[in-house]
Length: 406
Image (cartoon, rainbow, N blue to C red; front, side, top):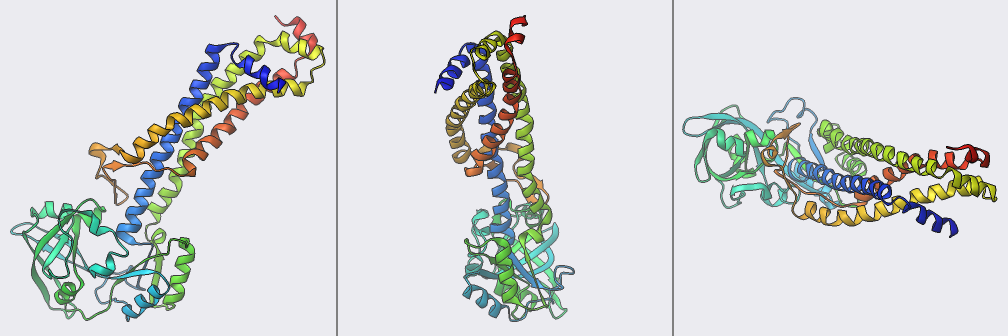
């Protein structure tokens, strides 16, 4: 308690220096907490766009399909596999995939056709929430389709206009038909935005003269299961060499690596910024030590141990750090509220593509235990490193050195 009292008084002996040091630590901690929340929110949103909208947690294809996509490589008895997976609490939906040419009155463009069951697909994908204009598919509207925003721009068409689709049917004949634009999607991904055409599974089968089956099964895992465990469980259910079962991390390895490495890069950024704080703290503590050499000499002369002197300096640094942590956390509350509920408008950067994924125009922060723990742990580590040398320096001062100190 006596050391605590002395340390508290020593901190405020030079108020200006202490305020500057505490202010620097507070500001850096505040910035790091906000940056942590922002990046966590951005990365979480990117993963959600991948999993909840485009890919799902796990996908199942015919073993040859991904290497050489073909309308002929369907999953046999796909409905039975869906029922088996859903019996094990894995939400699953069938998707039919094909390619073709989309045209309006004059322009044309390549298109990726998706045939879906509206009810089942809603359990595994939130793409129906991304309709920017018009409406999502309706089982009662067999001729209605929903297309990507950039495809709509290329073809110069809007909701209610007609869309011509041409391709090669399953039997080798020419497939062509006329559809009506029911809706236009917002930003999803570069591939979907530029060529995505979503239609009912029945309309897809009629267009391509295709009998049953599916080219892809999209699977969502139970919330209680980790992805590796869920992947192995789905493989056990599929249990055949004719099918390829992959997680979203295997289907999009670059994006998975980017998400994993982003937080590590953020930690490095924390370290770089905190180094500047350590230099300031080290300078302030060394100045405090050199100003009090005679004082430490007197303490040593009256019997105070080197360990007690060292604890005194460490306590002074701990007091300043504790005040900075308290202020930083309190000041971060309104900033985090703004990030989480208002978000950051990226302006013209919104909608740009990063490795095939579209960046949302508004990025919202999120709060988790890492939002506070990661900046705090790194701050505490660098502070300890910063005040350890001045503390050791003070502990080694002898009465003789203090007498001759100028």
